[in-house]
Structures are given as structure tokens and as C-alpha cells.
Length: 289
Length: 310
Image (cartoon, rainbow over all chains, first blue to last red; front, side, top):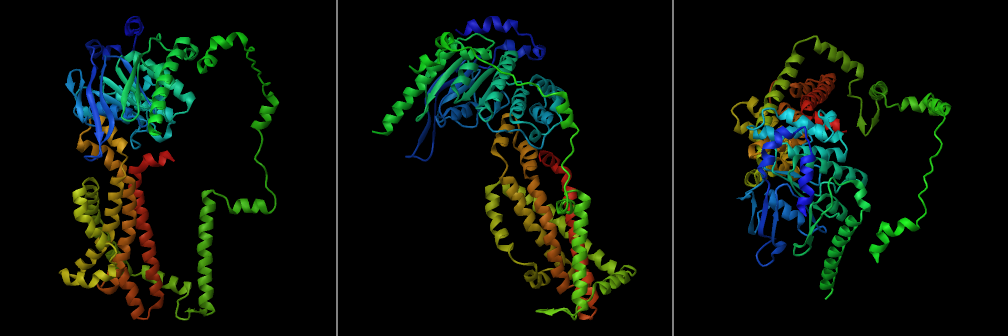
């Protein structure tokens, strides 16, 4: 199902950034292997299981959404891939190498606005390349290219507080991409935005992804968002957090807003909805017995 | 069942066609009238009030100067008529006497020596307080162990007023001058430490995470995230510290020493030069205010991003 989507589309995309990114795009990097990863917190005897042992493989360039209610452990799993949380059991591999702490090979976009308020928009985006210092001869030029891509070139000299929420998140995406990461990790990045802005942002993100062909792991509790964006939707259930369904989204790309009334889109949405509902019912019954 | 009602295929055939009604556009005249309209003119008391309450800067300064003038007028009248309600004004100098005394002093040399000595003491003690307080506060904010070792001292020593330090300071330090500097230094030190610690501790965790995922190491996180996040608080600590430094300096100068604006004020009392008491007091107020404004002006360039946010 994946191949139907990617094969013709990849050829059709022409990008201004293509020369810069072609090397690692052909390298087909960005494979994530989550191998029997379980995460538990708390003192001995009172362990709280946030994520029960889970195994997932995400192919290079794939757009995977983790869908689930709040508190189901989806952000914890994402934070483990990011390297902020160490798995209690199992291991996570990025292109075969185990993950040990956060790193510039995985760009992170947060739900809260996480731009550095004391840096201008350009300085925010240039921060990563500047810190790494070896690959990029001109971090500012990279920043301007990326800002142009998210449509914010005009705001490069502004401070984050002068931008709207949606604009700040676009800067956040540009900043996460500035290190040429292999994977983009997104933790409910559009959760705080109004619905109009959110829809525009989703389309924007898909355009960027089409240019970069980067692996995306996207956490959300919004069913429509997960189906609209993803190649796959992993449905996660609460306590203890476990993937209960791996749903392939065989919708054509580029995804357009009209998809919202497409029968296949609605069927997929219904499927996600049903899966979550059954699970919630089960949990509800368990609580009441 | 839910699914069937959501299906557009079901509703397409049966639903009435959607209607869109566009309201008529505004006429050119109406738009022009709005464009050239003037704000409403106020009449009578409302107009007077609008001028008096104007938020414009010249008007604000006019109000401030008026307030001070009224205060001086009240002072003048209270002295003239020897007001005697709980507090007695018969030994208080009038504004005119104080002014005359002030003019006499600024034509002489001694007054400037006293002011100069006080400013020098503030400058030395304050610089030491900054040089020790800011780094110490940063370390305490970053390291729980260092915090636990130093915070008990800060908490116990901080409430001790400068006056209470004087006997021990004189016993401990070799010269009177160094004991005054020490007391001034302590006054500035605690607000600087505490505000710096608070600034570091309130660094948003998400910014630290963002920096880590962008490849920043501990030192870079400190330089690019923790330090700038703490800067607004450090600036507050520096301004408060300057105020407390003057406070402590004056206590030291009144009780010991041969120079300084505090000494000047206190000897004026002993020498029965009553106008000089008020000259000294107002000089202290003015110097304290100016130096605090100076600190604020010096920290402002580092906080430009904050001004833009408002």
C-alpha cells in the first residue's frame, strides 16, 4: 500500500532544496526500530506502566501518526525515540544504531511554543547548525532558506513573541529541520492552534515533508489529523499504553482538503473511531467492576 | 448508524442546494465619511478631565512636577505656621532655608567630597556584590548540592539589618573604611543572589529540551538558554541590590566614618545645622534614585527581546 503512494509522487516533486538534500535522501536513512520497548515510572512496588512492551518498525521516509487519548503514553513513547526518556526494557534503533540521549539526527517539534524568546526568528532556526558548527558553512543562509520554505522569510528579524501561534510553530518546524535530521518527531504540534490554522498547517507540513522525504513520527489525539497526514496510523490505548491497531492509510497524495468528504477517508476515520471507542468501553467496564 | 448519517453520498441527493447570500458592499460615500470622521469632541468638565488625565508624556511630567510643587508648598506652610500636630515643625527648616544651604554647599568643596566618598563606596561594594552574587546565584540555580550548602547561610544572614552588622564589622575588619564597604556589599549581595537563583530555576524545561535535541551540550545550554532566561530576574536583583546598597551604606556612614553623605547628615544634627539635615537626606534620595535608574538603563540592552514582546 505504501508503494502506491510514494513511487510516482517522489519523482514528481522538484525542490529548490534538492541539491542540498539529495545525498541523504538517496541514502534512505531514517529507519526507526522500536524493539520490545516498555517504559515504567515510580518506586519499586508502585511501578506505573506508561508504555507496555511495544515493537514497531518505521521505514525511511514514512509518515507515521500515533493516535490516542491524552495520558495513553504516546508522548512518552515519542520522548523515548527523542532520547529524553530511557526505555525501561527493550531498545530503540535509528538506522541500526541504538539511541542514547537527544541528538541533532532527530528534529523535535513540541506542543508548547518552544522558541528561544531572546533570539530572533533567524537566530532560532540557525541555532542548531551554529551549535554543531562543522557541517554548515553559513547557518544564517540555511535559516533563511528554511524560513522561506515555511513562508516566514519576511519575519526573520522579528522576535518569537511578535508572531502568532501558527507562525511560531512554523518557525519551530524550520528550526527542527535546520540540522538536516533523519527523523522529525512531532508531539501534538498543532494542538494549541485554532482549527482553521491547524488545517493550513497540516497541508503546509505535508508539502515540506514531500520536499524533504524525511521520516516523520507524529503524535496526536485528533483522528482527522492522523488520517489526513499519515501513511500509517498507530492507535494507542491507555493504561498500560499499548498499540492496539496499525492502520494503513492508502489515500492518494498530495492530500487535499477535499479528502474530508472522500468515502475512503471517512471509512478510515470511522475505523479509528471504532477502535478507540471499543477500547474506551472496555476500560470503562473494567473500572466499574 | 452514526456512520450512515455522516456519509455525504447519502445526503447529496436529498439535501437542498446550499444558498449563499452576499450583503451589498458599502458605498463609496459611506466609506469616505468613515475615513474622514473625527473623534468625538468633549465638552465642559469632560474636556478638562480629558486634558488632566491625558496619558501623553508631557502631561504626565506636568502632573509629577505639580505633585512635588504641592508637597513643597505644604512643607513651606507647615514650617511657616509652626504646625504642631503630634509631630513638631518648629525645628524643621523651611524649603527656602534648605535651598539656600544647598546653594552654599554646591559652591563649596566639602559637600562634593562627601558625595564623592559615598559614590566611591557604593561603586566598589556593588561591583564586588555583582562579581560574587551573579556567579554564585547561577551555580546555586544549576546545582542542588551547591544550593543546599549555601542557601542556609543566605536565609539566616539576609534578615540581619545593616545596623546590626556594624559592631561585628568594626571588630572584624582592619579599617573603618573596609567595614563600611563590607556592610554595603552584604546589602547588595543577597537580593542579587536570590533573584539570580530564581531566574535560573524558572528556565522553561521545554527550552532546555529543545536545545538538547538541536545538539547543544551543557555549556551551550547554559550560555544560550539558562543565562538569557535568568536575565530579567538578574536585572531585577541588580536594581533591588542597588537600593539596598545605599540603605546599608548610610547605616555604616552614620555610625562610623569621617566622610560620606550619611556622615554629613548626622553631623549636621550634632552641629545644629538643621537645614543640612534635609540637604543630606534629599541628596541620598536623589543619588539612590539616579543609581537605580543607571542600573536599569545598563541592563536594558540585554532585555530588548522582552520589550518587543509587549
